[in-house]
Image 1: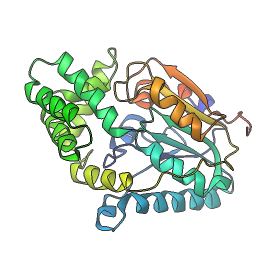
Image 2 (image 1 turned 180 degrees about the vertical axis):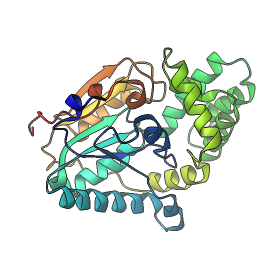
Image 3 (image 1 turned 60 degrees about the vertical axis):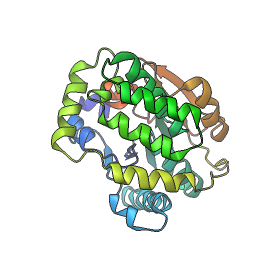
Length: 270
């Protein structure tokens, strides 16, 4: 990214998705070219009684500390499930946030992964076991064991990650899958433990005190999210949010140029 684009950008804290994912791909992709802290959510939170709640506490503390260190407000950027953490951080510490950007936010993870699984079954000929798991969950939609079977079958399906990327992102997908094969990008155990705790955590009230700009960015080829059904959920929390849909898959911040998703310093508080 050129210096002319990065000049004047507000320092940002990035909350990755998952849960149980990492920022390895982001650091590999961007290095230190952006004023973004690719914060690794500690997987050790699984040792706490409330791992999701602990992540929220940690993220809130990191945001406050970065604002103190910078002597200014910090932009908060969240991808995918990270939006759940950002929602709660915004309710706790709105005074530290310059702007909030939600990239491909997914509210209902179960519905989202069902959409992913359906897309995999449609595109890949070797997904019979995954199709069976979909049928079981459809017959018992509230059975969490059926959901976890779906997750296991999805992750066991070769090339399932391809549906997370747009049609034009072959090279990016190849690099991402190669990185996942050699680096600890994802921890399935942390995913399960943190997600289960998030289900048991009461959704916060709308962060009414959040007066900063809010941008919600969906990818038009993202099979995990559904702007039609979930866009209104997010705007219910952030009524003044600006929503846009871009030509990308789920990892919009990896597929697009930074100036298409980074928060703009010129935007004034709403």
